[in-house]
Image (cartoon, rainbow, N blue to C red; front, side, top):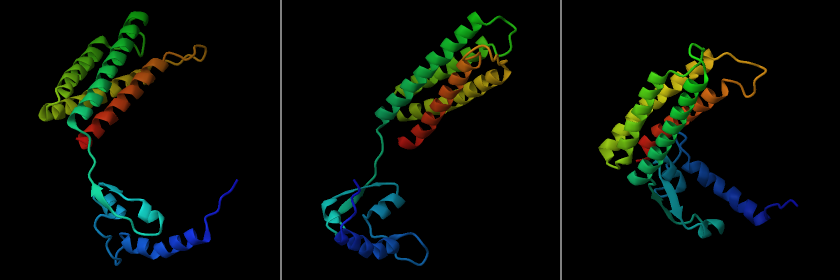
Length: 195
């Protein structure tokens, strides 16, 4: 079933096109009116308002609302994910140290991984404090530790010899840990702008 817009709706959309072009940011064209969706997007805010008037061909009324997360929400999300990475990184490293014979290429380095987990634990404690200066310090420490952990695990993946007869293979676990480190790194970096 294909539904085509009514001729009246098509005419109202065509009539609105010069207005939309006039509101665009191209040089020489008029600036958008304050409170319009285009103006809100330019200023990093969300447009909130009545959609009923716009649906009838009118402009609609609305206002710009700057949306940001609370410090507590960002702190909870970032600290939870940091603690999750500590568990994944430490658990995989412990398994690698216990199961893989010493001297094997790609085996986890207990000292380096322990230092990374300690740094992430400090980051977790700072972020969980929900105090703005401590949260920023924790995010900074977490970004450094997550980046270092990602680099260590990527090096382990490259050093590990691949065995085509073994599935999923010895590279699977460090690859997943490197992916988890990268996700935490992105989360912590995005947390800076969210608070």
